[in-house]
Length: 169
Ligand SMILES: [Mn+2]
Image 1: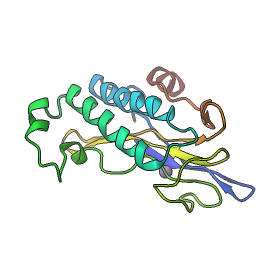
Image 2: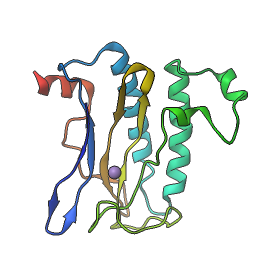
Image 3: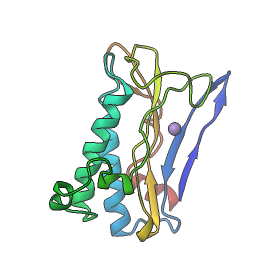
């Protein structure tokens, strides 16, 4: 079950997504796909620093997810070589951007080209949706840009497969 939700407090918003196995335990395949998204999420989080922008993060997300999808057997290297560049194969399973500004509104004002500055908060939300296998996965946290490392405002909320399964027990 994929849940995308958030709390509001003192006029500010939050936006988070978690995906949990309905019966409390991921199948092997679900776990493989979940961890593909989680690896991508962790890699992308590092990019939430001054000087970056949403476009760069989306491009990186597309590259990482494409590679994960090859490993998951959704298509092959060969398929990528032969794909229509206007319609890349990964878009069948991952068709949205991974970051938007957040603040007074859940999707706050801001352009995809705008260079990140300390104090900005953006979402990080890669996903994979495999219609023919009957499930979709998205992981989303809100990330604060600082002069140093990115601060994951939701890092205390369980996201690892084992932690989610433990909680559901
Ligand atoms: Mn979002």
